[in-house]
Image (tube, rainbow over all chains, first blue to last red; front, side, top):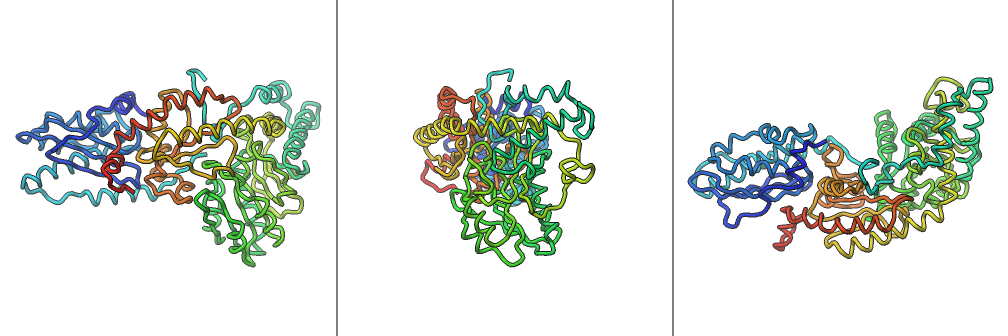
Length: 149
Length: 396
């Protein structure tokens, strides 16, 4: 069900870990829904020079975290903000439909980390939508049931 | 299986055993007659079905006339629940079941609720056990059916069926049990247990997929579920799945005959796995009752990690198992069974079910134990929840 690229990023995730004294940290998702992503950024002169992550979640959640760090390292903060969930999914050669919300999570994690960086540095930015994102995720959860045979 | 797989998912399905397949093959090729036909080929098929019926009846202490073949365990559950509900509506509209039933029962009950029936979903304790006292408390004048699964498919907990059967019998209420996971693993005598309806499935006990059976005690009022020809004495129309029925009969016979020996082996695999996993992997809990559980079932929750990731990594090592995590089948909620035993979502997402079968060996467990602690450790190192706990914070 997963592309080879997803499996590669899941089995050999890039940039797992934490950054000490990170310039921006973003945590999104909700353990209730089964995924949390925490993104650490090192930013110099508005350029993301390093990114690391920790993720609790499924294969797609780990793979989207991993590819996101690859996508944003070397980019300016403004460029990183332009990365969409679609771009994240495409970089992985696609995700199964039920897993598309994982790519949202990656996009949100990047945004949350950048917002943290900006607010720490006194740069104004409109309020994050992090709270709403929790709700979006859980609303989806309520509609679907799961069990094993 | 092409690549080498260690198969630990026998509660999901089992391979057809060679003895069973051998019995089935003639009815797929040479003896293809329609059992309703009067010529020789038809009579041969009919005879095969009646022999299978007898084997199924013998396995659960029933009369062959009380066994009706169906297309699956799910169909047997649907028939039992809807059939009893609709034909006893004049007596009442209340049904008692449990919160940990298979969806074949739960969703049939939900459907009946949408059609005006009232359903009570009994809670279970932290091990997944239903209390007979709770059943008793919920009975009211309009209660027409009690349905409690024999053994749970996820956590393996075996229910006090005999006690509940007595409560139902004393009050004249029809009692159904979904025994799909129990048949062949637990001794069953429908008269001793006071069960009125019992669902079975072939593919859980080395028989083929697509065939099941419903035991209906003589005298129980139940409407037909599939209308058409006169097969199964007019109660379940459809040209019979002859080979499948033959397979079910043989599979259930073998499973019952070898039960004791087989269980001894399964329990030794189960108990060793429980012991070693709990000893070697911290922050782990066993889900389901330690003793009142199916001989081949283990179910763990590993804190801070998510089940699908775990399954994928095990799969890369050639090990096939299941999880009650949301992500394992494209849905986003963890298993209703794990939530019903009181696990928080976070911990329910990190479950692993291993169900052993007759071909598993202690070497298979060696192979599992070679990789499982490392995989759990690797996923934990990646987990922000574990990071929180290491720093001394709460995460649930």
